[in-house]
Every structure is written in C-alpha cells, then in structure tokens.
Length: 135
Image 1 (cartoon, rainbow, N blue to C red):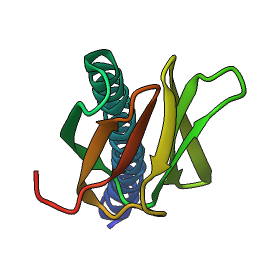
Image 2: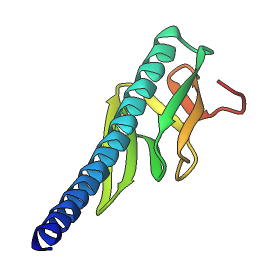
Image 3: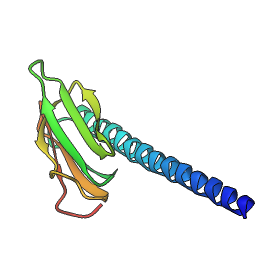
C-alpha cells in the first residue's frame, strides 16, 4: 500500500512537470512564430521598396492568438514592426526594424492562424495592411 501511494505521488509530480514543460514549449513556439512573421514582413517591405513605386506583394503570416502588431516610423524615417505576443505572466515584444518609411496597420489582436497582408510601395513609403483577398 505504501509503495502504491509513493508511486502515485511520483506519478502526479511527473505529470505536473510535464504539463509545465508543455506550457513553456507552447509559449516558445508562439514567440518563434511571431519572430518569423516579423522577419518575413520586413523582407517583403524591403523587397517592394527596392522595386519602386507601385510594386506590391502579398504575404501570408502565421500569427499566434493574442498577438498585437504595431507598425510605425520613427523620426529619422526608419520603420518599426512590433509584434506583441500575450504569454502567461505578461507579454513578449518582438521588434524588427527597417530603413524603409512605413505606414498602415494590421487589426488589433490578430486571431490564431494566418493572415494575408498586402505590402505596397508608394514611392518613399511602404504601406502594410490586411489583404482583402486570399493568399
């Protein structure tokens, strides 16, 4: 009986540790998805900028749930893409910069899954917005 009780306690402790590990893994995966999406979007922005005014592309971004995307340009004209991912205990911010002047925006709290994004060069500025079409 004592052996059974000790075994049950050890099993419950191991189960709890596995659950914590799975939660950390899922949070790390969400952050990695956001980082990959931010880099992919910066690459698309720089690509259409190099092509000149009127150039455009559409990219599919895999974005985890509870992610906010902020698109801005600082005073020296450099663009900033900030993906804020909600994780247990707070938020993680992923910031990718570019020398391209940015405008536009994506919806607040992007839903889990993917989002199609239109990236259009307007000459000296690149506009980033949610696509009305499919990818």
